[in-house]
Amino acid sequence: MVEKQIRDKSDIFNIPVLRFLFKNQLFIMGLRLILLELFIYAIYFGLIHHVKEENIFTTAVFWSLFWPLFVVVTLSTFGRIFCGICPHGFMGKYITNFGLKKKMPKVLSNPFVGLLLLIVGFWVVYYIYPEAYKTPIASSIFFIVLTVISVVFFYIYKDMSYCKSICPIGTLMRGFGKISFVTLGTYENSCKTCTTFECADACSYNLKPFTFDKRSSMTDCTLCMDCSSACEAVSLKFTKPSESLFKNFKIQKAEVWAFILITAAISIAMSFHHALGRVAISDEFIWSKLGLFLEDKIAISGVDYVGISALFFAMLITISLVYLGMYIAAKVLKEDFKRVFYTLGYAFAPLFIIGGLSHTYEFFFLHHYSDIANGFIQGFNLTQNRVEPIAARGDSWLRIFAIFNYIAVVWAFIIMAKRINFFSASKIAKIVAFVAASSLIIFYLWLNVYKVYAFKTYGAKKFSHHAPNTKRFQSVSLIDATLLQSGENKRDGILCGMDLVIFYKTNHAATLNGEARQYCSLYCLVDDLHVNKLPLENIQVVDAKSLKFIDVTKAFYVVGSRQKGTMSVESKYAFSNYEDASAFAKLYGGKILNFDGAVEIAKKDFKSAL
Image (tube, rainbow, N blue to C red; front, side, top):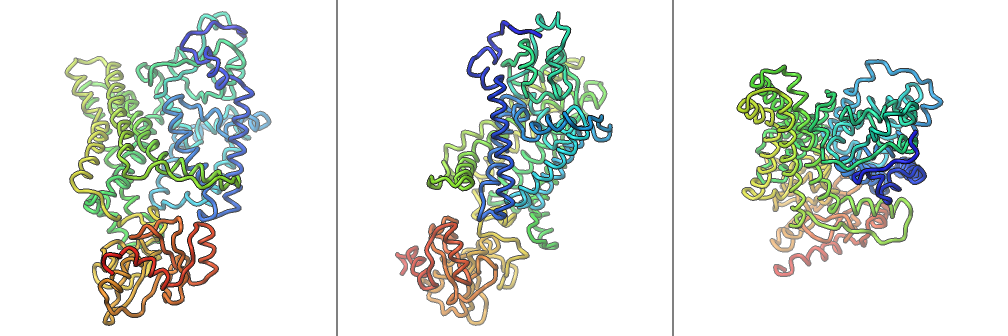
C-alpha cells in the first residue's frame, strides 16, 4: 500500500477542493446517506399522496432531479459518478457482505438483460402509455419493484453482479461514461513493487484498478472511490473528452447496442413525436398517419398510438441505417462485419449523451428547476412561495442549447475517424467506409436541420391531435371524451377548430336549431352567445372531475387557478358540486363563481366586440 504519492497536475486528487469532494470518505458517505433518505422519502411520499394534484415531490425527485440532471449531466462530464452514490449500489455493498455470495448464472450475467429491461420495461411502456410512470404512486411502485429486485440479487450473488448486468441503466452508464473527461487509474511506478493489492481488495465489484490504464478501460468501475481510500497510488485524472474511445480496448457488444437503441428511443423517437409533433404538418408524417389510424380503429384509454408508432419508425430507421452502413463499410474495408460493427459503433455514443444535453438544459429552465423547487417546498412543507419557471417555451435565448446537437455530430465524426484507423485499408477505402458507417450520424444531423427548417417553413401547430393526455391538464384520452357533434369534424371545436379532446376539461356545449355545437372553452361559447348573439339552448359544461357534461346553471366554476386556461389567460374549470370546486381551488388557487359570474369574466376578452 502506498501512503504518500506525488501527483500529476491533471490528478483531481491534487486539487484540495476536488480531493475533498471525490476522495473524502466521510463526505461521500454523507452524500450517499442523504440520497438514500431522499430516495426512500420520495417513495413513501408517493405511497401516501397518490395523485399529481396532491404530490409533485415524488415525480420531481425521480424524473427531474435523478433523471436527467444527476444522470445525463454527470455522465457526460465526470462519467459514472452517480453510480458511486446510487442508493441501490450503496445498499448493495452492505447486503452483499452478509449475502450468499453465489456466482451469477451465465444467462443472467449478460449485460443485455439490463439493456432489455430498460428498453422494454421503460421506454416501450413510456411511448405506449406516457402516464405510466408519471403519477406519484406509479413512480413509487416502479422504484419499489426495482429496489426489491436489486436487494434479492445483491443478497444472492457476489461482486455487485446486479449493477453489472441487471440494473436497467448499468450498461448505459458504463458505455456512455466513456464520453467523459475523467478516468480512474493508478500510478504505474508506485504499483510496480506492490504485492498487497489493497485497491483490488477494497473493490466490491472485484475489479483491479491497477490494470485500468493498460486496458484503456475502467470496465465496470462505478467511481465509488473505495479504492482511493485504500491506497494513495489510485488517481482520478482529467483527460481529453472520450479519450478512451480513441484507443483499442475490449469491446462490449451491449454497450454498442445501448448507443444505438437509446439514440433511437430518445433522440430520434422524441424528435419524431415531440419536436416534429408541434409542426403544422405533423399529421402528414408517416408515424402520425399510422398512429392516428390505429387510434381511430383501436380506442384504448391512455394509449398514445402516435408515440408508439414514432418509436417503431425510429427503431426501424436507426437499426436499418446502422446495419446498412456497417455492411457497406465492412465490404469496403474487407473486414469481418461484426468487427466493423462493434468497433465503429462506439462512434454513436455522443449522439444521445451530448446531443441530449440540448433537451436537458432547455427543460431545466422550462420545467425541471421549478418542478424540483416546488416539489421540495411541498415535500418538506417549506414556507417559501411557489417558484415559477425560469423561461417559457418560445424564449429565443433557449435556442443556444441546440448547439449541443451539432457538437454531438462533430464529436461522433471525430470518434469515427479515429476508430476507422484501427483497420488496415487504403485511404479511399477508409473514406468510403467512414461515410457509410456514419449513416446514423448523418441522419441525426439531417433530422436536427430539418426540425429547424420545418418550423421556419410550415410554422408551429396551434394544437396537436396526438398524445392528448401527456400535453395539458385539460386533456383526456379519446375514449374518455364525450363528443356531441357528428360528421368528420366532430372532434373539432365548432368555432376555433381546436381539438376538443385535448381541451376537453374546459369543453362547453349547446344546441342551435336542434343541432349540437361543442366548444373548446367558455371563451368560444361566449363568442357565439354574446358576440354572434346566437340563440343557444341547453348549454352545458364538462365537469372537470367526472368528465361528464352538466347543466351550466348547476356548475361551480373555479376561475383564475394556476392550471392553464383555454383561449384565455384566466382559467375556468367547472365542477358539479361545491366540494370538488373547493378542493380544486385549495390546491391550485382561484375563486369559485357560478356560470353568470364566469361569463362576466370571460366577457373581458371581448371588450372591443361587446
